[in-house]
View (spheres, rainbow, N blue to C red):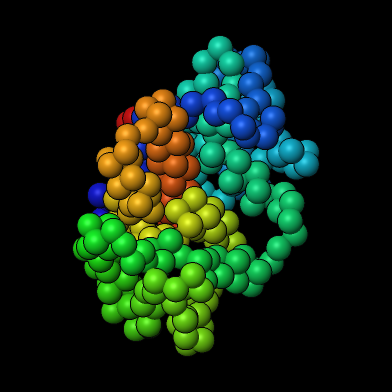
Length: 275
């Protein structure tokens, strides 16, 4: 598999500095003084473990933090090693996704994860179209139609778009095909896919990312097309826009990278070590 898009996701994940955002849950804004000097990886019976000095990392439910691939372990270790004087948990999206996969706090099975992701088709961002102004109508058509067309051809399904508040009518066969496609992923990767779908509010854009049809930057901008149009027309509160955009890029990049690292054993190992 070509690494271009995954390297791009990796680069975004590494370089984006997530701001401490107002208005989010306390635990997402949580910081703690760094209490360790070194981060290392060891292989145990259940997979790869993260060590903070001589302490084995645990999940919020006190389970041993064990991941299925060395590449994912290296990526998580990179998150912990990149923390400076304080540990900013709200920037550690890969660690959070691993914790969710290990603890499964909502106790969902594979079928439930798949159904939750596919359900986003009912409210998919790029399927809802405006009737005016004409400039935005044309922008949505020019930017969103190609990715819908690609998805329909790639999977042999019908999706379409609509100006109705009810959105397009998604055929049952479309859902069945996408459910079958997602079933080919393991539970860990599905956690990442649902995470990306939720960030972009679009199943179609998430599929484009997973199939390397879109980069992280492209998917994020497409998901924010109307917001960006309004900002260009009316202006914005600069810091708020920048924070929101960086946060969305970071989360989308981390989720995309997580899916890949949970699907491939060590494809990006050497790239991660170099960075």
